[in-house]
Each structure stands twice: as structure tokens, then as C-alpha cells.
Length: 196
Image (tube, rainbow, N blue to C red):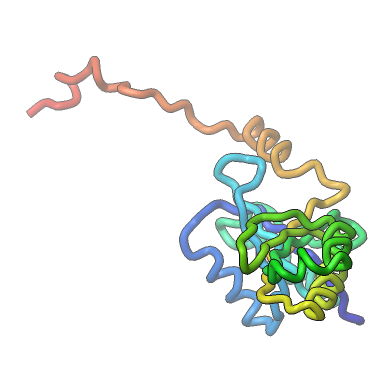
């Protein structure tokens, strides 16, 4: 089977050491992580990992099944680039003189939808978001004009045919509601509870 790019989306609890266990699963299978992003999801207490790898379909299916066996991982999805909406963010530090003196650079930044983040006498920092190829092309062009520094963020993605995890959590809570918490339930029974 031929390898292709997959985006794995994990919904997890926010627990210490989870990222180490997740990366350990990838390491044991000798799978390189191309991009990793983790942030809170739309549901309080649930985090979302977005992981990009290059593998074949069968390996990714097995990997997701193994990931879902982890206690803190609620759900693992895998998708091709056609099945998601995705972006990467990038920051570029460019000499201020280049931007003010070269009209082409200013047009280039507008063409790629770059917006200004910081303006100083010696440099200007721009940010943009787009697909990897777009960011690579802009980086290549800015290198011709003395790009000082460049940093790219990890992929963020939304699955096109997903209703998210929120509905699944609500559905689960309807089936298996948590016990009602009664605050101070023993407050009025002090003598019965604390007897000697």
C-alpha cells in the first residue's frame, strides 16, 4: 500500500503525561509525526490533538484503534486532506527597509493575505495562514529579500463531515448520567456522623 498524508484527530482528557504516551505509541511503530497540535476543544475539559503523519491506510487504522485503547483518549479519527478543512499559521520577520523600499514585497504580502503583527525601525513581523504549499512559496519569495526569521505553526483542522465531540458527550451523559453531587450533605447530621 502506498503512503499518503493523514490527519489524526484525538479527543482526550487533559492529563499529565498523555503526550508522552501518545508519542510512545508512534515511536514503537516507527511512525514519524510531521505536525502536532493540542488545544482545548469545544467541550470543557476535553482537549483535541491534531497529528499529521505519512502512512498507509491499514497502518493508520490500526494506530487509531490502539490510541483509543488508552484510558484518557475518548475518540480517534483519521482523515485525508480532502476530508478536512485545514490551515497552518506562519510568522515572518522581514527587514523594514525591504518592505518600505520594494513595492513587490508589499504586493507579495498582500497577495498571501499577510497582516502586520509588529513594526519596528529595523524589522516588521507579518503573519499569514494557509496550506503548507502557500506558506512555502511565500517563504521562498521572502528569502530573496533577506528574510530574517520564519516560524510555522502546527496544522489545525476541522473534519468536514463531523458534528464534533459535543453531541457525542451529551449523548453519553444522557445514557450514563453522573451521580448528583450534594454539597454539605452531612452538615445537618453532624452529631450522627462525628460520634465518639
